[in-house]
Image (cartoon, rainbow, N blue to C red; front, side):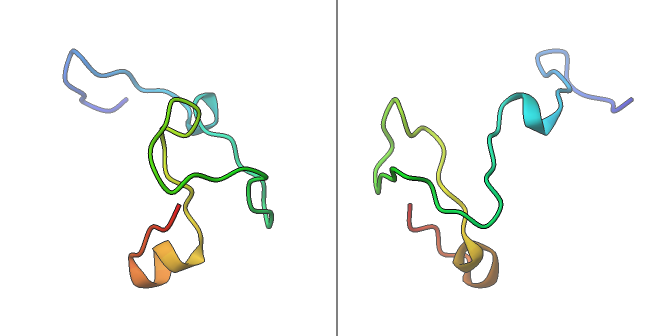
Length: 53
């Protein structure tokens, strides 16, 4: 087990992230909203460190 601070919890990535391989989300937002609190990570984010949505 990891040595995490007491205020942290170890969770599985799939417990709080949804993914769809090869498909962009049907709805995207360029700004953070209640329904879009986490940015969409596309290949450009990995290759060029540019997060667009």
